[in-house]
Length: 94
Image (cartoon, rainbow, N blue to C red; front, side, top):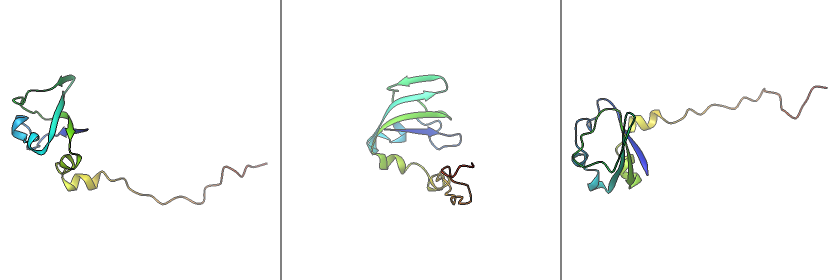
């Protein structure tokens, strides 16, 4: 299960759920979150809008392929070096 966010400017904006061809990729849309509304089992004819979220069930690899590689790289956390000059908690001042 995964949540797919439809940002402003996405090619899914203004497209019906059926036209996204998610069903052909074995991805089922379980819930549509639109603002403060929750729409369970949305109809396939419903048009998607910017800032919609789709709760989907299906092949995780198919859903990952929908996220552009550039976005995936950006979300990777930055690895920082450990700071070694911090005094240990075991050594207490007496």
